[in-house]
Length: 217
Image 1 (cartoon, one colour):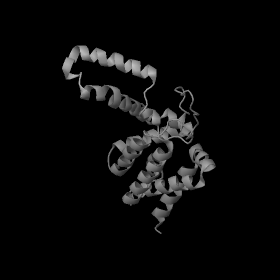
Image 2: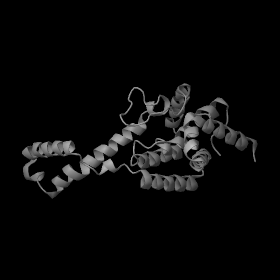
Image 3: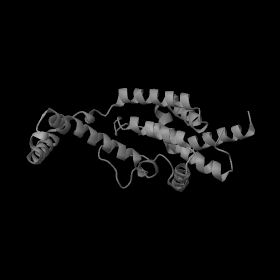
Image 4: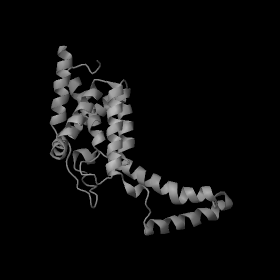
């Protein structure tokens, strides 16, 4: 094993273990924690096919066992709001809106899309990962710290490096992980764990730059 590869492995393992999140995951499932660390290593080393296969498989397992069923449900209060909205738009668009397509959009598609977008927004909030979601704590959801707040500047610096270009696979991973995570219950006890390897990857960008360790294989 080349020296730089050895250093990269050690660095990924240190970052993966030096946070609250992984130990909470270990407390629930050692296998799940080890799998997430493996995905983090594969992501950093850009072993693309295996990384994507594992995250997609894990994502489907999580969706099957922890699907946010509220995406497909409409409460009585929400239904009243949908009726009001439909009548409001129907006044302006008339027959263009008062048809099967308009009914489907108003009562089926748009409510689900709105809730899915809400889940996306939850998972994009840095407070969720570094400040136990403070001050946006959600009712009925156990919020917990995932990474020490002191690592936030390092994460933001890594995001800056990410946006500078050259890390398209890390971006692709994030898009897939975020897409899948938004289908999972916000109340899931371990949080949006598919995002864990991405945060590790971004922090690795920062610390590899500080330690002058090449990111590329």
